[in-house]
Image 1 (cartoon, one colour):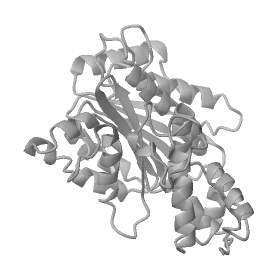
Image 2 (image 1 turned 120 degrees about the horizontal axis):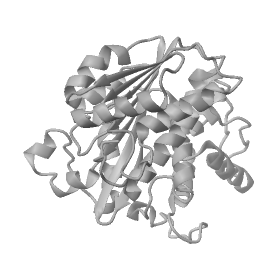
Image 3 (image 1 turned 180 degrees about the horizontal axis):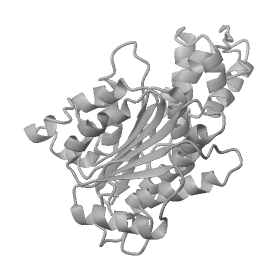
Length: 358
């Protein structure tokens, strides 16, 4: 973590760590499993901090190592796959403390290799970029910055070109809203419309999505975080829709009502039809999504189960929720046939089923 090691983690940091941990729980087994198709696993924690806070609560480095050790005990795990972990922090004291903590607590772990760096983010990013591009490896990059400058347009576009790489970025979104007209901010994130302050992290996510070349299959997801009067958030990026689906599912575990924030988002507060929310209170995201899904189907944008699956994940909705809505559509006669498969497996194997709309 990039938080100062002499401080207790804030609630936002704890939520951020919970999401990171839950994503690791989904991500690691895919590549540590005996059926894995990669030759190595590379994990980059580029604002790693000292490993824990003043009360001993684990930060991202120790959470990661403990989870790797947990999966190594699983009989379905392939234990001879090399796992390389790259820790960086520009604060030399923090990286030395982390190194000592790992040596004292874990010692040598079979086929797990640690690399420690004490450099500015931009320097270490380009130094490790060749490793991130390794085609026979699964890669996860955690960028837990303090601020907004880490992922500019150049670095973002470089990441979108890399296969088998997922990244998670923490960003102080409120800074962008408050100083969006300042050249020092526009140098990294240049948004034309700041919108509602509470929605700023969603607006920033859209800013990155607009950088994706037309026709390119790439997924960017977001989770907004609020601490008092400040808005922060996590962004997730991947060329793999399965990674985006796993991140979406994790977000819904953290936020069972809306799946995208630890507070009420104004953009989800209104129902397009002016109808009462079926949820009763809180977010109206599923209601708004149901309207958008129906509209897209009626306009012919979505004609198959594959179309609906991609639409679901792109909009941050669990595939099972989309299927439940399609069941309602079938009863209403909006579609003639409910698809049996709305899943990554159907997507990969191209098991196409037509909705045959009315």
